[in-house]
Image (cartoon, rainbow over all chains, first blue to last red; front, side, top):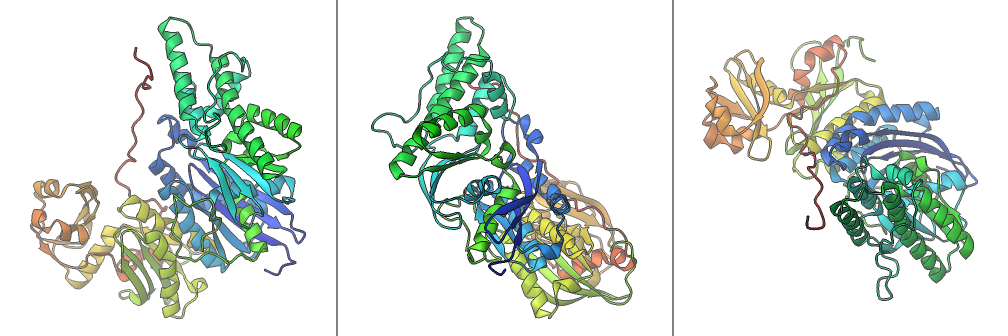
Amino acid sequence: MSANAAAIVLGIETSCDETGVGVVRMRADGHVELLADEVASSVDEHARFGGVVPEVASRAHLEAMVPTVQRAMTVANVKESDVDAVAVTAGPGLAGALLVGVAAAKAYATAWGVPLYGVNHLSAHVAVDTLEHGPLPGPALALLVSGGHSSLLEVDDLAGPVTQLGATIDDAAGEAFDKIARVLGLPFPGGPYIDRAAREGDPEAIAFPRGLTGPRDPAYDFSFAGLKTAVARWVENEERVGRSIPVADVAASFQEAVADVLTAKTVRAARDKGVDQLVIGGGVAANSRLRSMAEQRCADAGIHLRVPRPKLCTDNGAMVAALGSHLLAANVPESSLDIPANPGLFVSEIVMP
Amino acid sequence: MGAAAYSGRVLVLAIDTATPAVTTGLVHLDTDGAPGTLAQQITVDPRAHGELLTPHIKATLAEADTELGQLDAIVVGAGPGPFTGLRVGMVTAAALGHALGCPVHPVATLDAIAHDVFAAAPAEPLLVATDARRREIYWARYDETGARVDGPHVERPADVTARGLEVERAAGHGAELYADVLGLHLIPPPFPSPEGLVGVAADALRSGAEPAPLTPLYLRRPDAVEPGARKRVTQP
């Protein structure tokens, strides 16, 4: 692509249970425009198992792949010959699920004769915000919270290296929501149900612990396993003495504990690093309490907060296309056609060579 | 494309990833006669299907000095085979077919192996077996005309033997692995060949028939159990 022309990038995401295909256009001025964001989810097939079943997800990706690409291209109103690059999530994620997207992306890139970018899922969650809020003005922190990840990242430039400041040492934040939903008899995935139940509850009703917030604890790492156990123990004790469980209060108090730790550590990192831009992404970024608490604490600390709309926070192909468009614009070398899917791809590797 | 019948020579890309072999070939199919392979790339590596397949396709076409846009059709092995590898071939074929606007015909991988056997040595029943891992085989039985009369199934080799199948010869990598249990006369090939894959689809390719849906032959359900009651964190 010439540096001045608009470029169209198709992005494919299959790291978990969503088959996502997005199409974006990067304009010459560096603004990225969303043209299509099609998602086929297998979440309903996983609900009765209480979590994502990798083989079920992989089968669904194969079935949905070509129809989802077709839909995205129709919605975006682009022809095959318009596409300038194909980007795909190469990792981290579920191995078998990732491989369906990677194999499909290689085939499309080869058939269309365009570059392939095998990209990092976490960087894509950061890049997606440029679709909604425009280019990042400078260095930013990114808090990525989902069913599979809880990471605090330092990002200088979307096409450049990413530094992980901290991450969960046990459960991901979204996983904790799923598990507490189960304790409270709410359906999978737990996030939206807990959020809804919490609206009627008192967030200060029960003082649940804030993990890893002691003076000697790692400043930027997270832990949710202890919180999860504390909630389950509280509920079981109430049941044992024959009291009915105040679901709304438990949900609100649990959610408060999660949002408190996430935002407190993130704001502290922003102060420590002297960074005044924060992007929050991942499925848990759709949580209303996390959003409102982040807004307030960022406003107090003079941090400019960027949270994409919920549809862009959960896994989708548009975020992969968005990252691909930044890589293409920065003339980052394309990935080789023999890249593997890399379930453990580390966050510092934003694109596979 | 789709329903139009082909005339003269058609160029077909054959793909199979349902066995430890990553198989690609460029095959020509004429109005009559057997398919002929123009170029092929076959690597036996059960752990690299995702890495190798697209480079193999490119190398195959380059060797025959052919562009992807010249393909008339794609034939892909639909298994049965280990799931993760199988899906690499299926999704690659489906995406190429979409991108190139050419039909994609799925064929049973076991049938492709049988096709090669009957092309070389007809007139006797045959068992074809590939490795299903977990000490099982994917298998199918063919009568003396080469028609599939049983399968595909997934079973332990000893259970296949216990069925008392009236067959004396066997082909396929699974038949090799469990030759001692099956006790059958072992003949090649162990893996499907490009011309075997195209041979199975020859009638459909020549008549321009609408391809069957690209449905993988998994034969096993996903390993997943519904959770029981939640484990308590405190003593009752």
